[in-house]
Image (cartoon, rainbow over all chains, first blue to last red; front, side, top):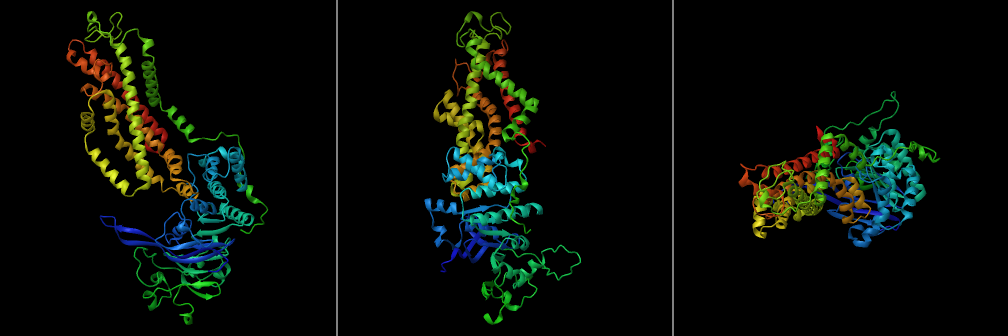
Length: 327
Length: 301
């Protein structure tokens, strides 16, 4: 396809077995990610938002090959990462890294942080002897931690500091693409901006590409050049960052946007309140998945599944009600 | 949130207050030291081990030297602090030498059971799938047998003897460890730091032994400490039944068995080794309980 695309996700699917019969065969499937496609250019930040359970974390783990997909492909520099084996796979691990949501669960409690950050160096044989120590101090300094604390244990640090440790560990292999899986949603608001700024600085310095997963649009707004909105395993809208905030098309995106708090009590605005709960992703019915909660749903919505179409340049949306003549 | 990137990064750096890093090990040791009962158990065990190791220097008798002239002497007799048995052998000497065997068998049997149990537990818990299903069903079957019966059956196949008895009780102990380790590994493998390790390209071997095993160690250590006591009882039991250590070897189970015909005239022959087993096993249990509380303070309530 196009030369400039760095990462291409094509019709990626991941189904988890939901109920199994006696022999371990599955009769119904939880469709966590169901046919997602998008592309990333080098150096950009794509924000991925959606509510809990919409499959965004699963998508992140598929892209970095922590999960095996049910179908579809991830092309990283034109190569399908799911076909990599052995050395190739190890090489890929150096180029893609992930930062996790839970700053408490993502660090081994039995290792001091120097050892934790040295792990990638040992795995890929990037430094030896004294060099390991030097590199660890360098990385700690890089993420704004005191290099003299390398012999401390994770439980001695605060949430924000632990997140920095996780970032240092990911940076140790000098990756090009980093999947940020809700890296700030477990942190205090004051710490959130510090970590976001750190990620931004690092991107400028090292030319990183980010896939930034979050559950609200407000965090993503500050970091992303492109934003994708997910609902129940599907991308419903994807566009350049500003365009999404200026001209949201999908009813779900509108609801998400109206949920961002504005720090002004006098300002009145129209809120789009969604009724009902998220549908179960287990064996979803035909039609648009948002249909049951959509304020604008019409008859066709429960019958036919809308596909992601380009509405204006770079602005894709999956909704029967948008751009009538295009369909 | 728009900041000039004037390196505001150092803002969360904590001051170096000169506090020593608190390693998890140091913290556990601190908690264990507070538990008086566990410390007492540990001290008794250290004394028992020292007495057994130093046995040749503490007594001038040969544990197997028969002296028919001085049979069935009660404790406190001149020259025989704890008396003699039905063949005139010095009880204190035999107890000390017997401690060597009992304690050594206890530790060795636990080590063997632990080694294979950990290996099975790590592999089945980490890889799951068919291997896991099959080995866990097999372990269910093993665990359905009463422990002692299973041990006797294995000895029956191998033939009686101290070494075979040890092998038998180790095999009986394996499922116990495999279960504990598997359960812990099943929960650990879903932790984000294990995912992070996979994302870094770590080999399974490295993940298993450097990241999962150290975190699964607490329950294993507790189980092993409690289990040494059980293994000592089991080994002595086998010897008592004539399936383990054979007379005239100085072993606590053999001594118990040898004294049973003289319970009326000289109860000390059976009583003393029985008490020795009791004290050692009790100490292991006390220490094990203390370790459990120290390793996981949440379990205390």
